Image (cartoon, rainbow over all chains, first blue to last red; front, side, top):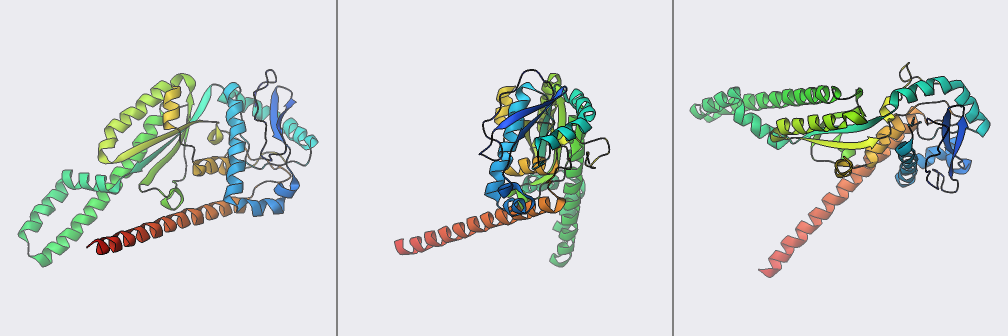
Length: 263
Length: 75
């Protein structure tokens, strides 16, 4: 977290409900930490607890809550969940080592918010639209009228193939254009792996899972761009879900990419 | 703006997990989640979603059966 001056309003409970969140200042930055019991968070206990979704959800929501509360008044750098040190001393060592990197990251993130945009498509609507407007599909439909039922079967198969191809092409096009246009209103943008139906439990298939780092001053332009995408693609069966503002989870990677920093 | 944000806000567990387990600065703490730990969480989540869907499907099937049996009796 940036700034050593005003303390943010902090939630009473840390991810271990028995211990509060507190600030650990180091030069011009401040770490927000809370103590945890090794009975629950030691390497072995943690492994078992991670499989308990109810346990995990409560801890994850608290972790997020601390960041969300702090980011109201301060620029924050989210740490990966369950980064645990044996002592305050170890946290200070880490801060001393990483301070310069954190300061430049905080500088880059000041006044920025992360927004999530997910695009889904409704297969029925899009398929129907393609059948209505595609010349190739219309031509085959006309051909089918004239053929015997045996031949018509093969023509229908071909028609289905063409429709599927066109649906796929439109999905790719919508995902790419949506991302490009939203990214043009953002400071930074990333495309994340799609969340499959087996995880979302949703009806519609996801075709874009993007995160955008948007300057507070640019937010209106970003929202306008989203509205214009909705107008353009909504009728075809594409829908847009926006989430945020998020602490900048997606935009704090170190220069080297995924490599952890520190020892 | 705030109204906009609230209307669109849907902090689902999946969105949170995607960010909190996979994103953020990775430091080597004395305890750190491994890739295998994270994979395990997603596996549990899939099982959970599947079991909710199965339960929902079973509930619907049972409700349909009850409705048709009820209709039979009415007749």
